[in-house]
Image (tube, rainbow, N blue to C red; front, side, top):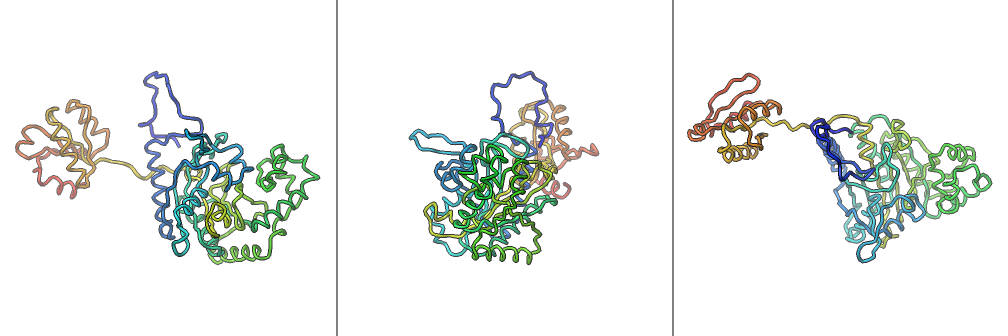
Length: 433
């Protein structure tokens, strides 16, 4: 999203840049920041209505947390994670996603001892060493939700409904919801063996990366975006649902029934697997054809084994994350928030700046947006600046006005100037502004 011209370098000075931002990491400038804040505010309203509370976890985490939870053979851990050793030789990383971090915080802080399902939401930057492209940055931002403490398909349906609703509230209307079930951990092992059996005699039809995945993480082949691999998979008529146990099959049926009861339209995608090892049972994606190759707006699913895997008690869990940059691409809507000062405080000479700044603070503390000139320019230049800022009034302070406690208030659209008592100033401005 381009920043406004007020904050863009206009090329007036030929300055040789000594330092530039890292590729794939973006500055967010005014007024674009206001668009982000607008999205976050709307999201908080919705998430609070659904009973979710904000949680904030560190950007830095132990590398092993993600190796163990996401999976060492996933693309994220193998190729995309930013990791390094600290001064004590510990393996540290910038978080590539937030679910594992929240699971770690949940266990470390004994949140499982609290009654009921624990429902969290979060905002923040994530980091992956990917090739930057549309909708994919090395530093990107997510809005996410996690519900921990239930195995019920009811919470699956709530999470999916909430994800879709949130996307709608944030201004996106054209998308589709795709769902699938991966079954339990035993089912996933059976599915992997089944896919290998189907693929092994046709492995040469797949891209080199998928040929490597065949032995290490065969499920990821179903998620490959290479047209050659998509065609090869479709030709094999793979049905992973046939490998799911009765309990998981029943769970999936109930999730679909609850979604239908909520009026949620969905498409069953038998090839949907998601790219993280911790997913079990329900998985889903909300996608848009307007985003190109990176077409996922939001996605999530169940991770019933993760809490126990990192040292906590058995706890069912489900969640999702939305990509904020991708929402902004689709939304393509300028911010409705604009800072517009009402009053500009000008001085006839610079000996009165102490009185001016005191008056500016007085106006602000009484809820009136006020500005002044900070560069000690002439009254004429101050009036020109006030006009450029589009203020409704200019309050002119001179020695005589301050001594008598009567200020000159000029209405900019009419040019009418009048005297007003200092003690009446706030009341008059609130009545007229």
